[in-house]
Length: 120
Image (cartoon, rainbow, N blue to C red):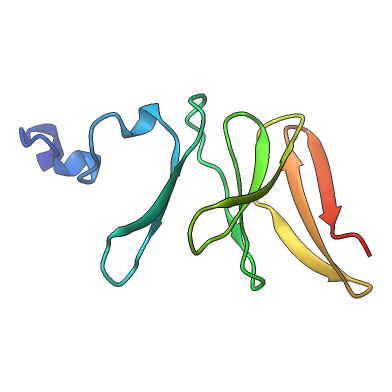
């Protein structure tokens, strides 16, 4: 196991990540063709949980953050478009579904289930 003895500043055991990556939660959009970071969004310091993501066909990216927020981003540039504070951190993968011609978004926050839809 080379990573146990690798003395490089970015050993293979860390996957080439920079030091202290786990001290600040960050959402990064990486161009799959070039590997370059297109944009990044730093979350408030807090727990280092990984937050589940949902990308919709309508052009939205949803994620939770350590401060119990559920956030909609523009996936093209990372700009936050909307957010809501939940009773707890996002604790499962958000989903979207169509019911009676209306699009709904479902997410768990702690032990609670939230459903959102655009007004008619």
